[in-house]
Image 1 (cartoon, one colour):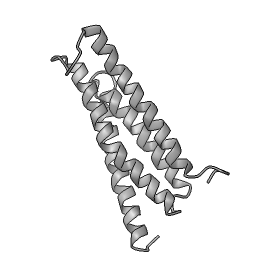
Image 2 (image 1 turned 135 degrees about the horizontal axis):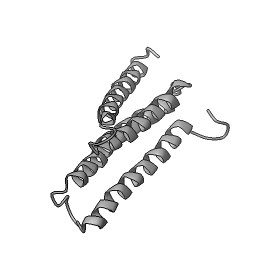
Image 3 (image 1 turned 90 degrees about the vertical axis):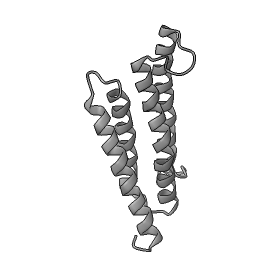
Image 4 (image 1 turned 120 degrees about the vertical axis):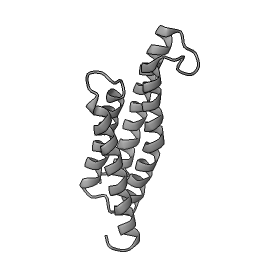
Length: 134
């Protein structure tokens, strides 16, 4: 733990997640402004993709953040937990870029796999803590 900072991994991940969410909102807003689409996706494929990437982020990130928080509160995070949180955030950036469908299309799969492995791994750690195995 960083000196004097309670729950540093959770704090850093929450900050990164907020910034990532804002970045995704800006990407959506640019298309909305350029195409004059106020609500929905207006049938614009790239806008729909970006909206879905942001929603997918919003669907998964609370679970990961909750698991990071509870593992850290249990005192079991150690030095590996910040690395897992950073990998998750990096995977979500890759997913958002990959959802554009051009250039870095592999990012979508990288982000999906990273998200699934992070959730499963953290859930197993939390269960192991609960069972007294860690």
